[in-house]
Length: 208
Length: 93
Image (cartoon, each protein chain N blue to C red):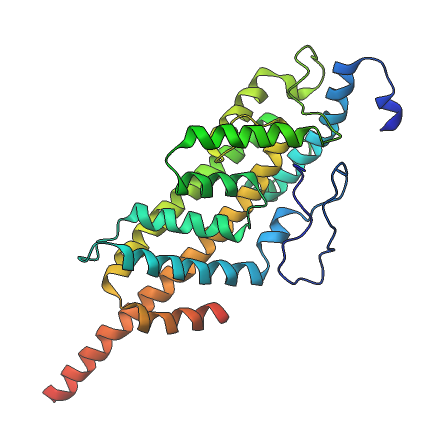
């Protein structure tokens, strides 16, 4: 179950649509860059972002003082929703937004995760404490894995393989978020520039 | 893989299976990183890839912060309805 399902529901004929089966872990998911770079995803996200920003602005107290943190949270929530809850980090973002009671949710999430681990055919990597073989049990690698787990939301205690998958998906999603927000900012600033220009032109016409 | 699973030692067994997987995942992650595209080495150490990933994610999050600050300022000054047309136009291009 922990493997990322092979396709989002956006219509992209190049991606095969394989259904999730419990116990089947070898279905190859599309690489994150493919998944997050389709035009459909970008448009979906941008529309969601605009809606979220508008909602944030309306919800803000009348002086229209929207904090940048509120904007960032709205953007992250929109991103998590575009992921359709298929990845742990997106679920973690959405759960943490909706409730302050983190402990309850973490416990519930932990229970669900433990239950789902039984369906996995491949045991998690961190279980075997005695194994010294391989590059992965080096102290450096373990430290960095831990660090990565702290950065990616909701991935503090994941086994290495799952954490790497989540990180790859998160990186691709963040890239899309940055791209979209930049496009939005450019569009808004262009719109903002054009309006004062029109005013200047009117004033110039009246003057001459 | 099934022949390896039939071995008796459970701990080394599980680490061998997952190590292959993990090496593959690390290389997949490496492909996503911008530094990896300039380098042509495909045997980058896992710790370096992880370090680069952490830094890259942090940079991306920082960019998101900066962009949201910028958007906050823009939102305060622009009227949403007139801007929406501009947005939709630019997004559909």
